[in-house]
Amino acid sequence: MRPYVVVNVAMSADGKISTRERRQVKISGRQDFVRVDRLKAGSDAVMVGIGTVLADDPSLTVKAEECRTRRLNRGVDEHPVRIVVDSTARIPLEASVLHKGAGKRIVAVSCRADPRKIAELQKEATVIICGVNEVELVTLMDKLGEMGIQRVMVEGGGTLIAGLISAGLVNEIYTFIGNMIIGGKDSPTFVDGDGFILESEFCRLTLLETHRIENGVLLHWKVENAEDKQGKM
Image 1: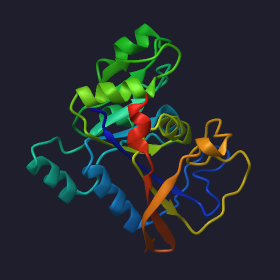
Image 2: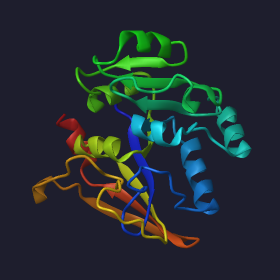
Image 3: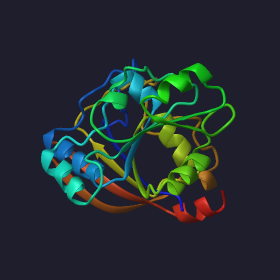
Image 4: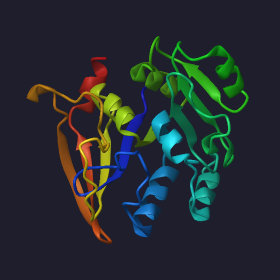
């Protein structure tokens, strides 16, 4: 059974997640960071694309000691499994996600990845090869399910999220909208890729709840018919 997938993003009032140079921007504040940390702690795994790793070098660890302790009390590692989707194995061997915090790491690559780089990565992480030219996300999710991973939190970036949504693999979305405008036609949004053309292809959402957090607003969405789309893959 494939994992239940929850996407969490912070974006500006005009829907941008960073500047056109892909520079990291602090969009939300302390209260939202606490929410995200708890969401991460409640997940079996947290996933990002290689673009996020190269731009931000995140560790993807649970920050609050209280949350880590609760995980340990549940009999799981203090940090969720860290997953990087990286078709050509561009991840630096010194990347924080491979070294900071105890726990398991997974790097998903395609057959285009350099076997020598894969061999180096296998010293720090489990490497999953799925896909000829790029990572096949449906196959990856099937493999994660077989490994016992039931809930995955996705933190970006836009290309990965677009691929997951297009494949019908996303179940819920949290969007924090901050009180700023970044602008720029080349600034990334939280769903990049080619986009949908026909209205019948659009990803439809049901709004579950809204919360004002500091100077922004959090929208919690359910993806309509996600299970049906997955069943057709």
